[in-house]
Amino acid sequence: MENNQQESTKNKLNFKDSKYATGRRKTSIAKVWLKKGTGKIFVNGKNFDDYFTRENHKIQILRPFEIINQSTEYDVNSKVVGGGHTGQAGALVHGISRALLKFDENFKPTLRKEKLTTRDSRSVERKKPGRAKARKSFQFSKR
Image (cartoon, rainbow, N blue to C red):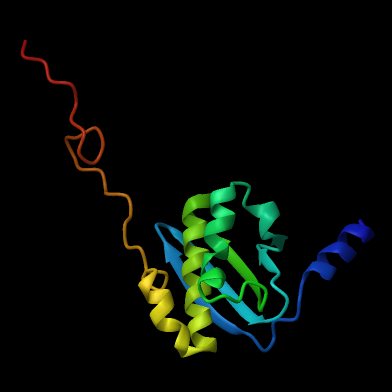
């Protein structure tokens, strides 16, 4: 128990003088704190490699840093709530991009060109009455 507590406090970095931004996608919300550092990324207290198991999610999260050619310049601490892993990864990317803009406004044209600062507004369409799902009908029977 003591060893586990020591390990978790060792993983946490001091984010007192950091920039904060919120990222959203579908029903996921990511609260992101960004500061100058060595390239460590924590999601809900875990290393992002342990939290996200799919390789495409890991690549997607590192994308904002690779676009600005500073993959090991910043440390990220984030809290992600809601949705699934894909939505959470998208929300994290959106939050990281917005936090990077607070550090340096010169990143805006490059991040905007890759559409990382824009919130992806797509979400699940609501179910309508008299339908099986949002658009799917019940099976039709002539007789």
